[in-house]
Image (cartoon, rainbow, N blue to C red; front, side, top):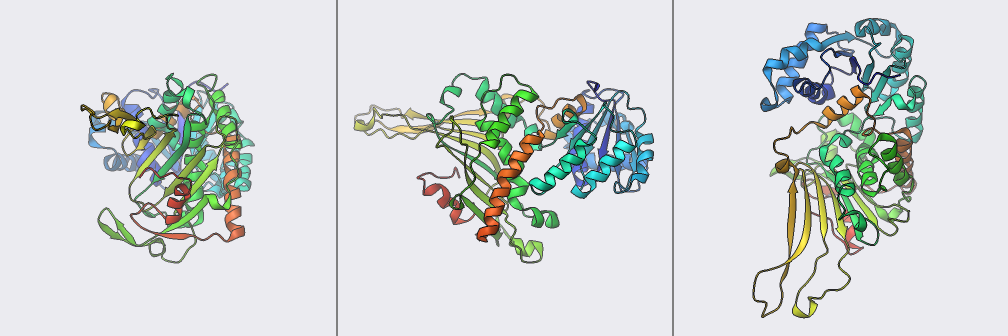
Length: 482
């Protein structure tokens, strides 16, 4: 049996950008708050030829650079650094794994592995872990994306991991699921009586899910040209948000119940039709008052990789028949924003019409970043004697999660995910059947693009994407929440 808490954590890619920006600051936050076992050892490994002291200095520098000063208790820094050790490894060869196992030491108290590596290294890494005794029943493994670039390659990676680890010991990471606001979506739906009776095709007109960025390639040239926006954002983050939004109420808040309901939604996604998809690529423009170049200029060569995708999705089941889910994501857009918009239907009869009262259907906005809030747009009557008619106006009912929980620690998403990995809690991780359902839907879109030689439409940096994305909603008599 797996120990409830691991006594050691092994970080692959421990000198990389993800480790420096997210993993080490997250682990320090958990250490600072006393959430890690006092005896938990953290072993880093990568190709870099560091020793323990060198890794600790790298970690110190990373915390100084990426952890805000108000979140850093320097009195606890040395205790955190003492947890760290390091072993160089070329994961493409089995030769270095025995030395890694020696460095990790006794794993009878449980071992958690965080594996962030290039896809071609998954199979040799798993073989090395198994051959060196680091894949026994007390070991669980967390897998950071990308896990393949289509269904076939994803299956190869998952098969390689499954050769040494059963599903109950595999933790596939989607860092969006570690965000508090994403988890609050479940609380909003299933802990409040007012929403669920309307959360269906009778009460909701459509959904919008937007994940927009103002940045360009940001040092990810090779990765982004090969991946594009569809595989980088839609296949994982956005489909997970859609599944949480559309899922049926689970029996319990546990890994099996929640993931069972999510996969039902993903399997019910209708194939996207040609007129329901838009590909875009940013051209030169202005973002934040600064002139920026186009994608080809940033990349250094021409490319047909998409930096923007807009889709009209449908969940073909009883609850959501006829309700579209509009998805859009892109780089160099007008604003950095991640949100879910729930557009309710209008009331069936306007009793104020003869007195001039005009109605706007209620709208619920769940903002994930950069702010975190839930905003319900309601109709209210403007104060007055109404002799010239009733004036109705849309007013917001706001719940700022930042303000409402001002005294609570706002955590990096990876803090929750790393702690859950260490403790063996799978609820916020993605199961294999979910991943395959997501890839199956996305691969069909890519096949349609390939068959139709789909045009990548240019859009000026600093805008909300190509005009075709606006038309995607406008021809249905709807508008994006810009």
